[in-house]
Image (tube, rainbow, N blue to C red; front, top):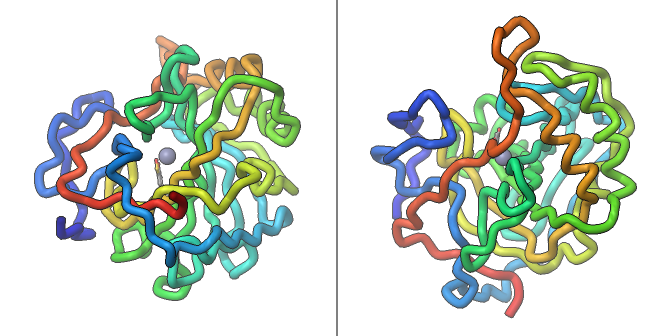
Length: 263
Ligand SMILES: OSc1ccc(O)cc1O
Ligand SMILES: [Zn+2]
């Protein structure tokens, strides 16, 4: 499947998550990862993340999810290795989740749904000088996906959970500093699946090297409940809508190969 990086104009319903068909898009995300159809590639290296917590700047509600944004004006928080040939800069991370613990992730593994999924978004700083250029460029982005399961409380996540009430409404921003996103990675960063796909929110550009970790992280039921206390709507709107089910429907594989770094 030739994955062009042109803007994909999708016929989207008012609820952007449910684009019916994305004409011209043959490399869309998310997908179901069929484990037995993934192809082991011994050349795939462990992920090499080098994040500087001092580059953490703010947390805000963009009306789709909440984003923790990093200063990406220099190569301070970087991702290399894995399937990547170039160096990528961390610019933000965000999550997708459901209204119940039964669903919420964007990717699935043999159709298995998780209650939530973390996306760490990086752009290719060897090839581009700004995220905005990379987002629609070839080999522009690398996104690490980590599944969340409900279990024990995640101590590192709590600082982020405590900041959420301050950004309940769309458009609200608060300062958020000294957060090390490495604490959200699973202990095993050697085992992952990787494939070529797209953003799962508009502009849905097909510029993403996806790296989906095999090992999940655990968060508590109460921590996830705070995610669901966020709102899609701004303070001025009459009707307030809970920010839940902010995941996109799965997209056709269109002949793409999913590689695995493990057997
Ligand atoms: O959902 S995946 C994703 C990746 C990059 C981005 O800038 C926004 C996104 O939502
Ligand atoms: Zn995402």
